Image (cartoon, rainbow, N blue to C red; front, side):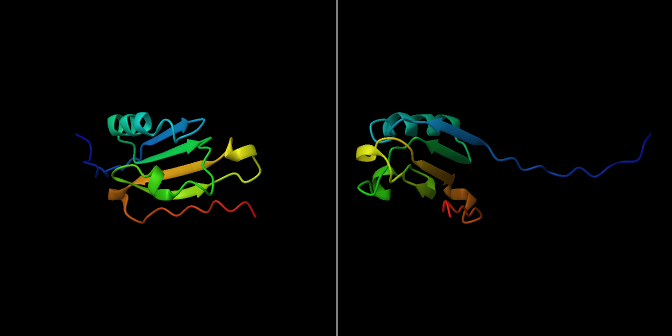
Length: 101
């Protein structure tokens, strides 16, 4: 028989990506999808969030909002925007900088 090899545990992250075309009117549906899929990290593009939308309005249970980039060059806040969430169990191990400069 061959020599025994040490097996290493592989940790994998799951990722969910959503093009929302406005998160505000779909938040319940997005929460249900996140609850079903249980991704470690999920990103929402085309969030259509703007400075008039507070972080508390777009919180998802058991997830931290770790990055937010609102578009400021759109008409009435429509279009653009990015939100990235991570499971609270991941802690503060992820840092994202959304600055475009």
